[in-house]
Image (cartoon, rainbow, N blue to C red; front, side, top):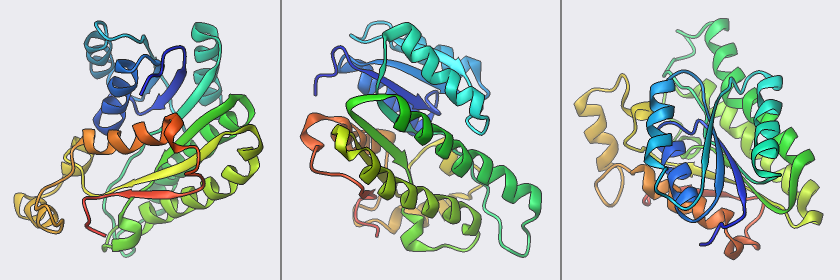
Length: 245
Protein backbone atom coordinates (compact mmCIF):
# COMPACT_ATOMS: atom_id res chain seq x y z
CA UNK A 1 0.00 0.00 0.00
CA UNK A 2 1.26 3.48 -0.84
CA UNK A 3 0.03 6.32 1.34
CA UNK A 4 2.30 8.95 -0.16
CA UNK A 5 0.69 12.36 0.16
CA UNK A 6 -2.13 11.11 2.38
CA UNK A 7 -2.85 12.20 5.93
CA UNK A 8 -4.20 10.14 8.82
CA UNK A 9 -5.32 10.81 12.37
CA UNK A 10 -4.89 7.91 14.79
CA UNK A 11 -6.29 8.32 18.28
CA UNK A 12 -4.66 6.28 21.02
CA UNK A 13 -1.62 6.27 18.77
CA UNK A 14 1.13 5.86 21.35
CA UNK A 15 0.46 2.28 22.45
CA UNK A 16 -0.78 -1.14 21.41
CA UNK A 17 -2.90 -1.34 18.27
CA UNK A 18 -2.78 2.42 17.75
CA UNK A 19 1.01 2.55 17.87
CA UNK A 20 1.40 -0.34 15.42
CA UNK A 21 -1.11 1.33 13.10
CA UNK A 22 0.78 4.62 13.16
CA UNK A 23 4.07 2.92 12.31
CA UNK A 24 2.43 0.87 9.55
CA UNK A 25 0.88 3.96 7.95
CA UNK A 26 4.02 6.05 8.21
CA UNK A 27 6.06 3.21 6.69
CA UNK A 28 3.78 3.35 3.65
CA UNK A 29 4.20 7.12 3.28
CA UNK A 30 1.29 8.56 5.26
CA UNK A 31 1.75 11.65 7.37
CA UNK A 32 0.07 10.97 10.71
CA UNK A 33 -1.21 12.96 13.66
CA UNK A 34 -1.12 10.55 16.59
CA UNK A 35 -2.95 11.43 19.78
CA UNK A 36 -2.07 10.23 23.27
CA UNK A 37 -3.88 10.74 26.55
CA UNK A 38 -1.28 10.38 29.30
CA UNK A 39 2.20 9.03 28.54
CA UNK A 40 4.30 11.63 26.76
CA UNK A 41 7.24 9.22 27.09
CA UNK A 42 5.46 6.61 24.98
CA UNK A 43 4.47 9.26 22.45
CA UNK A 44 8.02 10.52 22.12
CA UNK A 45 9.30 6.97 21.74
CA UNK A 46 6.86 6.54 18.87
CA UNK A 47 8.13 9.78 17.35
CA UNK A 48 11.72 8.57 17.54
CA UNK A 49 10.87 5.19 16.02
CA UNK A 50 9.18 6.89 13.07
CA UNK A 51 12.05 9.21 12.15
CA UNK A 52 13.61 6.89 9.57
CA UNK A 53 10.29 6.05 7.89
CA UNK A 54 8.97 7.74 4.73
CA UNK A 55 6.07 9.60 6.34
CA UNK A 56 6.05 12.06 9.19
CA UNK A 57 4.44 11.82 12.65
CA UNK A 58 3.11 14.68 14.73
CA UNK A 59 2.11 13.80 18.30
CA UNK A 60 -0.57 15.63 20.27
CA UNK A 61 -1.99 15.13 23.74
CA UNK A 62 -5.78 14.93 23.57
CA UNK A 63 -8.70 13.67 25.62
CA UNK A 64 -11.08 12.29 23.01
CA UNK A 65 -14.00 12.63 25.42
CA UNK A 66 -13.65 16.42 25.03
CA UNK A 67 -15.09 17.72 21.78
CA UNK A 68 -12.64 20.61 21.62
CA UNK A 69 -9.65 18.28 21.87
CA UNK A 70 -10.90 16.20 18.96
CA UNK A 71 -11.54 19.29 16.87
CA UNK A 72 -7.99 20.41 17.69
CA UNK A 73 -6.63 17.10 16.36
CA UNK A 74 -8.22 17.77 12.99
CA UNK A 75 -6.97 21.35 13.10
CA UNK A 76 -3.46 20.07 13.77
CA UNK A 77 -3.62 17.73 10.77
CA UNK A 78 -4.89 20.48 8.48
CA UNK A 79 -2.30 22.99 9.72
CA UNK A 80 0.62 20.56 9.34
CA UNK A 81 -0.40 18.53 6.31
CA UNK A 82 -3.23 20.34 4.54
CA UNK A 83 -6.15 18.00 5.23
CA UNK A 84 -7.26 14.58 6.48
CA UNK A 85 -7.83 11.41 4.45
CA UNK A 86 -7.99 8.69 7.11
CA UNK A 87 -9.30 8.42 10.67
CA UNK A 88 -8.52 5.46 12.93
CA UNK A 89 -10.10 5.59 16.38
CA UNK A 90 -7.94 3.38 18.61
CA UNK A 91 -8.30 5.28 21.89
CA UNK A 92 -10.13 3.30 24.55
CA UNK A 93 -10.25 2.22 28.17
CA UNK A 94 -11.55 -0.90 29.88
CA UNK A 95 -11.84 -2.40 33.33
CA UNK A 96 -13.85 -5.63 33.71
CA UNK A 97 -16.79 -4.88 35.99
CA UNK A 98 -19.89 -6.91 36.67
CA UNK A 99 -23.24 -5.17 36.94
CA UNK A 100 -23.28 -5.89 40.68
CA UNK A 101 -19.93 -4.12 41.06
CA UNK A 102 -20.52 -1.25 38.62
CA UNK A 103 -21.36 2.29 39.62
CA UNK A 104 -22.25 5.52 37.87
CA UNK A 105 -18.68 6.84 37.79
CA UNK A 106 -17.36 3.70 36.10
CA UNK A 107 -20.15 3.74 33.53
CA UNK A 108 -19.65 7.42 32.78
CA UNK A 109 -15.88 7.14 32.36
CA UNK A 110 -15.98 4.16 29.98
CA UNK A 111 -18.77 5.68 27.92
CA UNK A 112 -16.99 9.03 27.83
CA UNK A 113 -13.82 7.66 26.25
CA UNK A 114 -15.07 4.65 24.30
CA UNK A 115 -18.39 5.95 22.94
CA UNK A 116 -18.47 9.72 23.36
CA UNK A 117 -14.85 9.98 22.18
CA UNK A 118 -15.53 7.93 19.07
CA UNK A 119 -18.69 9.97 18.39
CA UNK A 120 -16.74 13.24 18.46
CA UNK A 121 -14.16 11.76 16.07
CA UNK A 122 -16.83 10.56 13.64
CA UNK A 123 -18.54 13.97 13.68
CA UNK A 124 -15.32 15.71 12.70
CA UNK A 125 -14.51 13.06 10.10
CA UNK A 126 -17.94 13.41 8.48
CA UNK A 127 -17.40 17.16 8.20
CA UNK A 128 -13.72 17.31 7.30
CA UNK A 129 -12.41 14.14 5.63
CA UNK A 130 -11.45 14.66 2.03
CA UNK A 131 -13.43 12.81 -0.63
CA UNK A 132 -12.29 9.20 -1.02
CA UNK A 133 -11.30 9.02 2.64
CA UNK A 134 -11.37 6.10 5.05
CA UNK A 135 -12.76 5.76 8.58
CA UNK A 136 -11.89 2.78 10.79
CA UNK A 137 -13.23 2.49 14.33
CA UNK A 138 -12.04 -0.17 16.75
CA UNK A 139 -14.82 -2.43 18.02
CA UNK A 140 -14.39 -5.82 19.75
CA UNK A 141 -14.97 -9.53 19.27
CA UNK A 142 -16.41 -9.64 22.80
CA UNK A 143 -19.68 -8.50 21.23
CA UNK A 144 -19.90 -12.09 19.96
CA UNK A 145 -18.37 -13.79 22.99
CA UNK A 146 -20.35 -11.84 25.65
CA UNK A 147 -18.02 -12.55 28.61
CA UNK A 148 -19.12 -11.57 32.14
CA UNK A 149 -17.80 -8.20 33.22
CA UNK A 150 -17.94 -6.71 29.73
CA UNK A 151 -21.45 -5.24 29.86
CA UNK A 152 -20.49 -1.55 29.80
CA UNK A 153 -17.63 -2.04 27.36
CA UNK A 154 -19.77 -4.07 24.96
CA UNK A 155 -22.59 -1.53 25.15
CA UNK A 156 -20.19 1.19 23.98
CA UNK A 157 -18.75 -0.95 21.19
CA UNK A 158 -22.20 -2.04 19.98
CA UNK A 159 -23.17 1.61 19.71
CA UNK A 160 -19.99 2.32 17.75
CA UNK A 161 -20.83 -0.41 15.24
CA UNK A 162 -24.33 1.06 14.87
CA UNK A 163 -22.91 4.55 14.26
CA UNK A 164 -20.42 3.29 11.69
CA UNK A 165 -23.10 1.44 9.73
CA UNK A 166 -25.16 4.62 9.44
CA UNK A 167 -22.18 6.92 8.83
CA UNK A 168 -21.14 4.74 5.89
CA UNK A 169 -24.45 5.58 4.21
CA UNK A 170 -24.21 9.27 5.05
CA UNK A 171 -20.73 9.81 3.58
CA UNK A 172 -20.78 7.17 0.85
CA UNK A 173 -21.66 9.70 -1.84
CA UNK A 174 -18.20 11.20 -1.38
CA UNK A 175 -16.51 7.79 -1.86
CA UNK A 176 -15.64 7.69 1.84
CA UNK A 177 -15.89 4.30 3.53
CA UNK A 178 -16.54 3.68 7.23
CA UNK A 179 -15.87 0.33 8.88
CA UNK A 180 -15.03 -1.27 12.20
CA UNK A 181 -12.26 -3.69 13.04
CA UNK A 182 -13.26 -5.96 15.93
CA UNK A 183 -10.13 -7.52 17.45
CA UNK A 184 -10.08 -10.59 19.61
CA UNK A 185 -7.63 -10.78 22.52
CA UNK A 186 -4.45 -8.93 21.53
CA UNK A 187 -1.22 -9.07 23.49
CA UNK A 188 -1.08 -5.44 24.59
CA UNK A 189 -0.91 -3.73 27.97
CA UNK A 190 -4.57 -2.82 27.45
CA UNK A 191 -5.55 -6.49 27.33
CA UNK A 192 -3.03 -7.99 29.76
CA UNK A 193 -3.61 -5.57 32.64
CA UNK A 194 -5.25 -7.25 35.62
CA UNK A 195 -5.35 -10.75 34.13
CA UNK A 196 -3.69 -13.81 35.64
CA UNK A 197 -1.35 -16.06 33.63
CA UNK A 198 -4.03 -18.73 33.70
CA UNK A 199 -6.67 -16.40 32.29
CA UNK A 200 -4.32 -15.20 29.54
CA UNK A 201 -3.48 -18.80 28.61
CA UNK A 202 -7.17 -19.68 28.49
CA UNK A 203 -7.89 -16.78 26.15
CA UNK A 204 -5.04 -17.81 23.85
CA UNK A 205 -6.33 -21.38 23.80
CA UNK A 206 -9.70 -20.10 22.62
CA UNK A 207 -8.31 -19.31 19.18
CA UNK A 208 -7.71 -22.10 16.64
CA UNK A 209 -4.08 -20.94 16.36
CA UNK A 210 -3.64 -21.30 20.12
CA UNK A 211 -2.17 -17.83 20.51
CA UNK A 212 -3.14 -14.27 21.32
CA UNK A 213 -3.33 -11.77 18.53
CA UNK A 214 -0.51 -9.30 18.07
CA UNK A 215 -0.88 -5.59 17.30
CA UNK A 216 0.46 -6.16 13.80
CA UNK A 217 -2.34 -8.69 13.14
CA UNK A 218 -4.86 -5.90 13.70
CA UNK A 219 -2.79 -3.35 11.81
CA UNK A 220 -2.98 -5.72 8.81
CA UNK A 221 -6.78 -5.43 8.82
CA UNK A 222 -6.69 -1.67 9.31
CA UNK A 223 -4.14 -1.28 6.52
CA UNK A 224 -6.44 -3.13 4.14
CA UNK A 225 -9.48 -1.06 5.05
CA UNK A 226 -7.71 2.28 4.55
CA UNK A 227 -6.29 1.19 1.19
CA UNK A 228 -7.70 1.66 -2.26
CA UNK A 229 -8.36 -2.09 -2.41
CA UNK A 230 -11.17 -1.84 0.16
CA UNK A 231 -13.54 0.54 -1.64
CA UNK A 232 -16.25 -2.15 -1.76
CA UNK A 233 -16.00 -2.91 1.98
CA UNK A 234 -18.23 -0.35 3.64
CA UNK A 235 -20.40 -0.20 6.75
CA UNK A 236 -18.98 -3.48 8.03
CA UNK A 237 -17.40 -4.84 11.19
CA UNK A 238 -14.41 -7.01 10.34
CA UNK A 239 -13.61 -9.53 13.08
CA UNK A 240 -9.84 -9.90 13.32
CA UNK A 241 -9.60 -12.63 15.91
CA UNK A 242 -7.87 -15.65 14.38
CA UNK A 243 -11.12 -17.58 14.20
CA UNK A 244 -12.10 -17.22 17.86
CA UNK A 245 -15.61 -16.08 16.97
